Amino acid sequence: MDMFTELEALCNINGISGDEGRVRDYILSQIEGRCEVTVDPLGSIIALCKGKKKSDKKLMISAHMDEVGFIVTYITSDGLIKFAPVGGIDPRIVFGKRVVIGDKQICGVVGGKALHHLEGEEKSRAVPFDKLYIDIGADSKEQAERYVSLGDSICFDNNYITLGKDRLKSKAIDDRAGCAVMLDMIRQGVEYDTFFTFVVQEEIGLRGSTAAAYTVAPDYAIVLEATTAADIPASSDDKRVCELDKGAVVSFMDRSTLYDKTLYSLAFETGRQENIPVQTKTMVAGGNDAGAIHRSRGGVMTAAISVPCRYLHSPSCVISKNDLVSVRALAGELSKRIFEL
Image 1: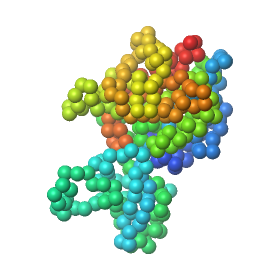
Image 2: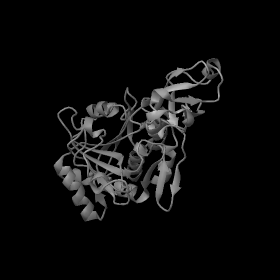
Image 3: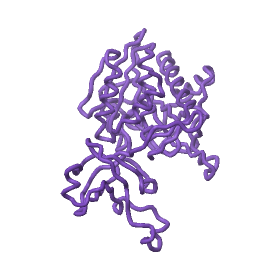
Image 4: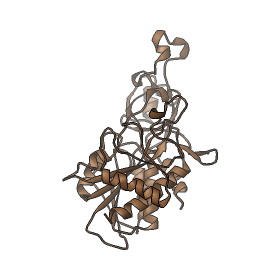
């Protein structure tokens, strides 16, 4: 299976933080017989992929399985579903979107006060989550409760499609892109014994990676992610963060990590020598599982390689195929060079 077919399969699976089971089952089916696999108590996959060579260094490559979404908090007397966000979601992008709820995959639409009922500042503000609801077509609480329960997961209902020649649009590219890269690395084989961790609950506080890094106890880590690309006309040069079609993004700092300078330099050196497009972020913003991994146990030398992604944490994330290829190439080369440090 090629990496883009893999990414489509992964993105079309629903799995918000704390409810990653379907994603996990799919990944386990793809790595069966290729790795020594355990699933930890939180639900993260820890897979040891045996290489051609052994080393006294231990490398962990990690990506998270969860996506942002919502959770059911209340059902009104007239059958409307109240909800809360799971992960960082901009309320501006939620109104009018189609969603699916729970194991039964009940379809619904996010609604709120009608436009002609808005008054004053309401017209220029995003509708807060507590003023929104999901309409599943029920006309009473009793009818809605036949299909939906409190605590049910809610995911964006959005198709994976190609835009133009080489752009991809889907929900959950953050971070099914990283998972797709890791699955490709496992299929292609590794030079040295390597731990691959597919972790849970990144979007609500780096929880899965905290536990997985403690278990693996690596010397080095590579986090594979999607990161914000703000390369749109409204953004000045320094606010664009990173750009589509300029290659893999290697961070020097974000809100949770000051990255190891040796690995940061090695990533760019590897890119130059192997003709892999590499860029960095022009803002100190965001964060990822590196924030937990680099502080695990006695400390872990950590690098992050990300695919630049427009409209992150929305139902319509957009990436470039070329950038994902660059992420895959850089991750493979950097993982080999780390063992040679």
